Each structure stands twice: as structure tokens, then as C-alpha cells.
Image (cartoon, rainbow, N blue to C red; front, side):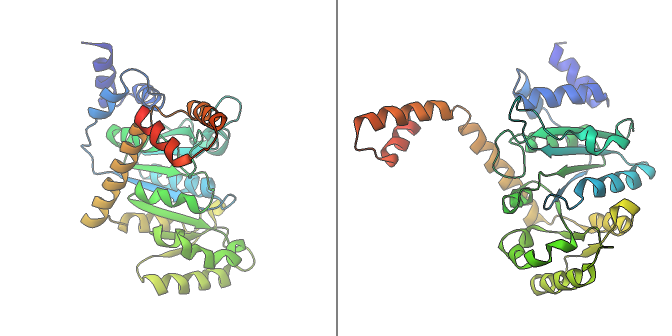
Length: 298
């Protein structure tokens, strides 16, 4: 039996070290990455929960409270925490141990930080693959927490079976801007830090805005630091089901992203800049001719 086959055998037997190794291989495209991905089996009907929202909304604190409640009920949770990339070593900058230290030794919890590595949205370029590895491992729930960079986070809708948007009362002036994108992706809204001034008005305005779109999207008040609203949130997650049409959409988005990433795999910005440099020297620069030439070269 080869080394990779042994690793996969350990993976499917529930070996957490094998899970960590598989994630490292896939994330860094080490030899064996494709074999791991193509051999994934999804025996469990588990789902991916996306948690997004602006910086400072308390997403990590909310996730901590959810993990505490779920593991207390005996359930297992995989966490993918997307962090901004360090400008020095391209690793994750914030680090899961800083934000979720209380769960580090919990055997029912596995936490992995992924760096965005230049990805424009709130996700890492390898988020799809890593979450699928975690799903195949058999966690009851896989939670993806995004960076929190604004409207580009709508890409989470192409990954998560249930998307939770976390807001705070101070976002009151920004409610109207939610119509531009985040409004459409949310399966559940959570107004965290709801003990702050202006929370009642904000929740009321958000409910009115949600009702104008759909009567089915819940708006939950929470104070994550005190565990308030967590039961309601877990209940809403349980009721958040992906119908056949949405499942097709999710799989289409995943496949499209994976195909795009594969086709762009050999495109390097450095090579592109060299090509532009040479073309500029010749004069009569036309970016569309350059793109056509670049595309055919690859």
C-alpha cells in the first residue's frame, strides 16, 4: 500500500493528524493533492455554513458561542477561518488560536486558518477544496468564517448551504447599501451586540427591509459574549435547507470557480508584466491584442 493510500485510510478512520496533512497537501498543491480530492467520499449529509459580515461585528465570538453549544450536545464542528494574508510570509495573519483559543484542545472541534493569498473576495482561493475535505472527514457541521471585506463577500453564497450575515447596531446607516448584494445572499441575519444603543431601531429597520424581499429570512438578535440568541441561531441553521434549485446553483458556482482556478493556474502576473513591458517598448500598445496573445501562449 502506497504512502498516499495509507494517509487516506487514516483520514477515513477519523485520524485528525491525517486530516491536517490532507489539508496541507491540498492547500499547497503538493503531489497527491488531485488524488485526495478525486477520492473524497461524502457519506454524511453534513452542510457548510458561511458566516460573513463587516469587521468588528463579532463573528468569531458568535462562532465560539455556537461551537460551545453544539459540542455540548455531542456534535463535531470543523472551522475554516479565512484570514488576511501576511505581507511577509503569505501565511494567515490573525490566526485561529488567537480568536478561538478556548476550543483548541476540544477533540470535537478542528480549526484551520487559511490565508486569502491575494484573493479579492472574502475567501481563500482554496476554500472550496478545504471545506470539501472537512465534509468528507465527517464533521456534523463545517463553518466558514470570511475576512469581512464588504460587498465582495457575496462569493460565500456560491459555497455555503446556509449563509449567515452578522451585523451590529452601528451599521444602521449602511442598511440601504445591503440591497446591493449582501441582502440577497443572506439566509439568516444576526444583529450581534444587540445590547447596544440603537439596536431596537436597527433591528426594526432590518426586519422591514427583509420583509420587503422575503418573509422567510429570519432576523435574530444576539449578544454573543453572553450567549444570548445562540439557541435561536442554531435553530435557524437547522431549518435552513438547500432546495434542489439552490443545490444546483451551489454546485455550478463551485464547479465554475474550480475550472476558472485550474485554467488560470499557469498565469503569472510577473510574466504578464514582462510581456506588457516589451509591448510598450514597441509602441502602439493595445491591451486587447496583448490579452489575446497572452491567452494563446498559455
